[in-house]
Image (spheres, rainbow, N blue to C red):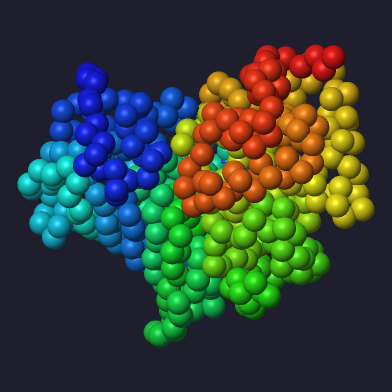
Length: 466
Ligand code: ARG
Ligand code: ZN
């Protein structure tokens, strides 16, 4: 498609739009006249997200039949047009659309790969709030990411493991699927009696009738689509409220219960310890979903309630919990900045070890630094992974944590921990970029850190420490 440049009339959208969305639109792919672009302008995932509007809220009503693996869904999106729109896209992969309205009027729609193209009966004005209702059904299947991993709605032997980073949200609901756009969520999900459906946030209620149970979940704080879950299985459920008033909901596959119990018991103390380091926990709800999903093999920091494909280690629990601040509350504006999520969560693991009688962060750093130049750790720099296939690579996690350790040594512990807290506070339930982080580090420490970040974030190969 042809691309024209568009001048965003920022003043008109300023109040309603997260800064990152406006920035993406301003910097990202041009929107051709009044047609919302097919992507949010992210070079790693060009079709993820869409241009021209912001979704304020998703209301999802789902019914999943675990035997047939059939999903019926209704998605009601409350959105705001950031420009005049005669047409806009949603991301949706697979699934059949059986109805689509915009402001209760039937709207034109067609499919093109993962894009669902919507033509409202009447053009939307810039700044206009509108409501899109999509009814859909089918057998959701995960997408394969550039690194070969499965992402999205992944059936298990007793339900589904649902984790959508980076692009799997579109496998189970029509979404503006880029972390640059965050929204509140209401998820109502009906499953066969005996199964439990676990989404993000607070459980408003559940009821069973005619052999089915309906769970109503509410995620109030803004959330990126990739961090939404609606994981279904046979789970043991545990609920309590922490001393800080956080509502905890743990759902555990009984086959994983024995291995998970000693780790999950530590969740409140891990969250308290992290709050001490990073500032107040950003959400009103917390918890864990421990599934048995052998085909997945990774965990995800689904907002408020991480999902684990098997019983996690304590280190993994610390990692996914740290993501609640770094990755969930403070979201990426572009996937290139993924070290802001993974480097920080990995460094939290090092700090946890250091402060709980284990190896020091320095020791973890030294062990990594000892690796030969041929090691995968040095394959690409963490600040510039280069492609979506690298976003979960070792350099992003481990060298990303090494960046923070170098920073800590350069500025000293008091300034370093002030920087972490300021980062979490200043971008609380919003977005942050690498440039904003490096500026903040310089501002808080009063030091020139340009060469440190240039070397550790961006220099190819193994940095020379001399
Ligand atoms: N952010 C997750 C973690 O490190 C990893 C997600 C991996 N996703 C994937 N599609 N491979 O906690
Ligand atoms: Zn992580």
